[in-house]
Image (cartoon, rainbow, N blue to C red; front, side, top):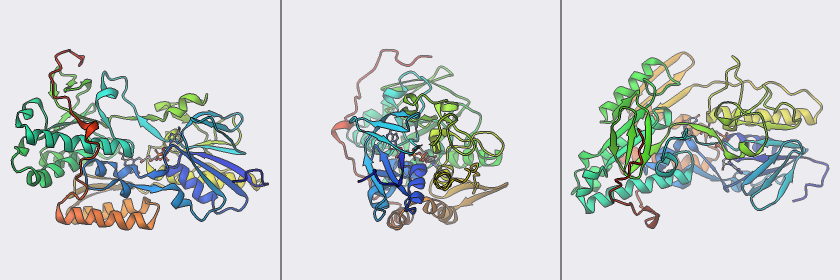
Length: 437
Ligand SMILES: Cc1cc2nc3c(=O)[nH]c(=O)nc-3n(C[C@H](O)[C@H](O)[C@H](O)COP(=O)(O)OP(=O)(O)OC[C@H]3O[C@@H](n4cnc5c(N)ncnc54)[C@H](O)[C@@H]3O)c2cc1C
């Protein structure tokens, strides 16, 4: 690729909703040359990771090749590499293999990672759910505990079928619902010799309610729906530590388990540590309303990587729709700058929020209106919302087929235990008191 042309060079770090949204918009301009750098060669669709973890969707349904998505745009070059350092003063980034990329504009959209809040053992022993790799790892663990318990039912006493989800926000709530359905609708048939009914899902939430970003009625609806599905809610409880064989809670009790899922919070991806930029809540980069970083002309931070001020001055939530919209907005601001026009402040068009609680219940809040949806209507609404965020027609069609298959057949087409060797579970006793109270 020749970046020595008269074209304006834009370097984008991250091919998530924000970075890809920006790249796709810029790709349509003949005045711009784009280098898009991502540590993976795919764009991952995070809102559906919990479906990968519960074997409802395959990895290919939630990951799209960046090269394929941007194929046909000669002015976009994709590089698969991890950016280790960003130098905003020189609008340059350096990758793990020592390559440097300098742009006339630099767009930082490296997303987020799990925030363990220094909880003892959490990083080591829990399963976060923020990337495709993590979702695959969790799926393998869920399948592995069933396989092991099927061979040795004595493992039930060691909490083999206890699943503890930390965090009752949308990710934890959606996962709890999907896991409950997986166990009751599928595992009972797949493991007829195993006392699957002894499986127990615990959802631990520090606050007093689930689905904090939603209304009070939605909190109650979510709690009621999960309880109906047999999920035990531990509200107002904090996790004090995670050990290989159990999780400790703030009331002094502990739950024996080999599967602790961390859905307890997010922070900016590690690149934010190495950029020397002003940071706010969650370690995210502080940006101005037009998404530029104060003091660094031509440098933007977007999506989950940034604290983006909303109309009321409060930071906007970490949502795919926010990320996607600010990606396009940044592209427009860059094109405006090139044309000698002023940048404009980002305006988020809030289309509402939705959470699916298992396969037959959902809550959607659009403006001030709240909708509780049941059965196929919930499923159809959820399909529409998620398909609208997907990038390619092929992914939409394939995901639709898998979703519909799962919904109507109650089967899990992706119930394959891969990475068998990595999933040998240590069922030994761990008498050392690694869980602190
Ligand atoms: C489990 C889960 C469920 C969610 N559900 C919903 C939902 O239902 N609705 C909704 O609106 N939002 C949802 N979200 C939030 C939404 O997915 C995020 O807000 C959105 O993905 C943010 O987009 P982004 O582009 O900022 O970051 P990401 O989508 O995280 O993209 C960041 C990209 O940067 C790359 N990257 C990171 N570091 C580097 C580096 N150093 N070098 C190179 N590349 C790097 C990553 O590989 C990734 O491709 C969910 C999130 C999760 C985790």
